[in-house]
Image (cartoon, rainbow, N blue to C red; front, top):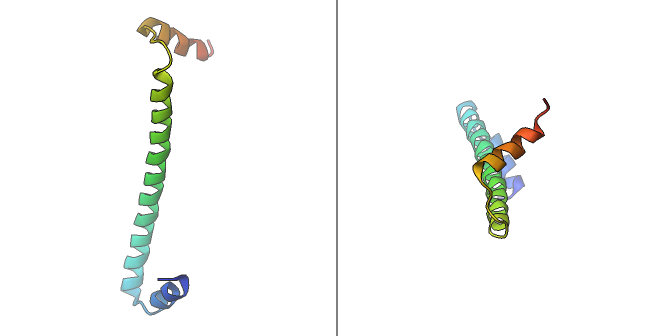
Length: 73
C-alpha cells in the first residue's frame, strides 16, 4: 500500500474506525521506538562485551573506586 492508497483508506473510515486507527498508529510508533532503543542498547552491550574480551578483569574495589572518582565531592 502506498501513501496515496493509505490517505484514501483513512478518509473513508468512520469516526470510530479512525479513532481505532489512530490508537493503533500511536501504539505502533511506541513499539517502533522501543525496538530502536533495544537495538541501540544491544549494540552498546555487544561493544562492551567485545571490549571486555581484550581487557584484563578488575576487582570490585577498583571498579567501585573508579566510579566514585567520577562524582564530585
